[in-house]
Length: 126
Image 1 (cartoon, rainbow, N blue to C red):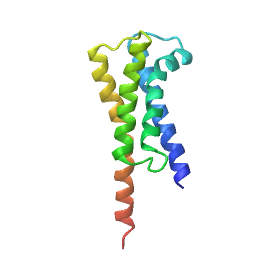
Image 2: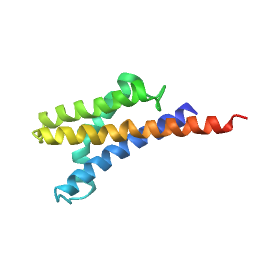
Image 3: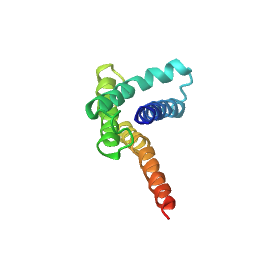
């Protein structure tokens, strides 16, 4: 079960970062396709990988703390550092938008799953 949860969690994290990149590109009228979206997403995906490795997220992939928070922090911090290192923009407004959007997704979906699991457990009690 843990392996399946880890695979789903990793997929959810990757999808959220790709959605973030796609929305960002679209909001700037940049419509070059999937390769361009991945080119925008890769620094943040690298950060997600760092967060997973640091917390060994595969052990507790659905945990808000430390997994969700570390994956979020890794995605944001590593993403910004890699964008800076590769001469991509890191305007202050972008930093804020990225922090909020990534946080809502990378921590948020875990919070929703946790609440749903608790609700199911409560309803299952006689």
